[in-house]
Image (cartoon, rainbow, N blue to C red; front, side):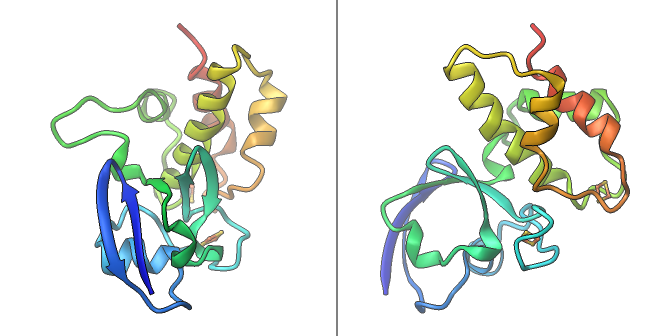
Length: 156
Ligand code: FES
Ligand code: FES
C-alpha cells in the first residue's frame, strides 16, 4: 500500500506491506534509530513516538495507519545544530538517564503530556506527572530522577 505522512516535519511517501509495524518503518526503513524496541508488546513504552499530538507505542501500531498523519520521533525534538528540547534538557539536568534505553520513550511521553497541559494552561501535580509516565518502564529503575525531570518541565 502507498502511504503519505510527515515525520519530523518532512513529507514522505512510501510503499509498505500492510503488516509492517510503525517501529519497523521508523527504524529499518527510515533509519531513525532513536526510537527503541523494548518488549515489542506494548508494555515498556521504549518505542513511544508522537502521532498528531498523542504518545503512541509504535510497536503496536501498523505503519499504514500513519497515512495522512504527522509523526514526531526523538530525532524531531532537536537537530544536531539546534538546542535541546526542554524535556531533554531537564532529563540531563536531573540525571534521569542511566543506560538510556528508556529515555527517548520517557521524553516523547513527557513531551506529549506537557504539550497538552501547556495548551490547556494546566500545571500538573507530581502525581499526575507520575501517572502520565505509567506506561513507560525503566529497567535501571531510575524513576525518581525521571519524574523529577518530567516535573521540572513546568518550571519557568
Ligand atoms: S517496545 Fe513498544 S511498548 Fe515496549
Ligand atoms: S535508564 Fe536504563 S532503562 Fe531507563
